[in-house]
Image (cartoon, rainbow, N blue to C red; front, side, top):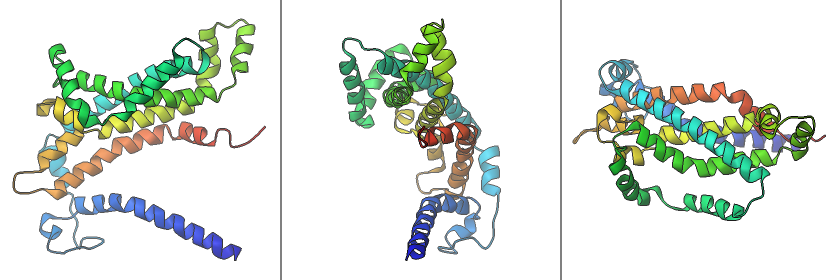
Length: 274
């Protein structure tokens, strides 16, 4: 019975993995399917003939490289600025007792309760007099504002997991609070920083509502908005759109591969006692 239970558990895991990865498989499948086979062959797991023409067109004859660059700039800037601000705020909420601390935490939590669509018009009205509409800088400002609250709570949870005794011992040995933070706390929170950077980067990379409403020119458009260029009034070029989607997965995958070591440390932290 135990062997049957183990087998059933592993089959359930494999079924879940297949279910989660199937959309990615279909994305790749459509991206290498020639246009003349997209509809004529019906539903098949793999086309009878493949082509990389969609990728060639996307890279050489479309504005995708420009959209790709804009998204990379916005996502990286948002990730690092939001993580830095959230790190300082999370440390303050974790280590210091001050008047209004609960109020500040409550206000940060309240910001996560509003639908993004509801805030597009007010934010556009605020940014327009400042000249930050149709601007990558304005997009970064908006993304940072919306991602800092959650990132702050995320960083606070990591700081809460580090004993205060480590800092106190370093300060007794002559280190300043900033020195104790830099030499003791910061290395221990690298998994938390990596997780926060990954979360914010992914959120900024895939965000579309503000990018669509605040950006009015192709020169400043990001990748999610750029995908709409493959949709015409009477048709949708699914092959080129899926090829662009596959290419857009590459930076996110590479980014998570770079921070994988720290993410694993964060997932396994505290798993062993003593």
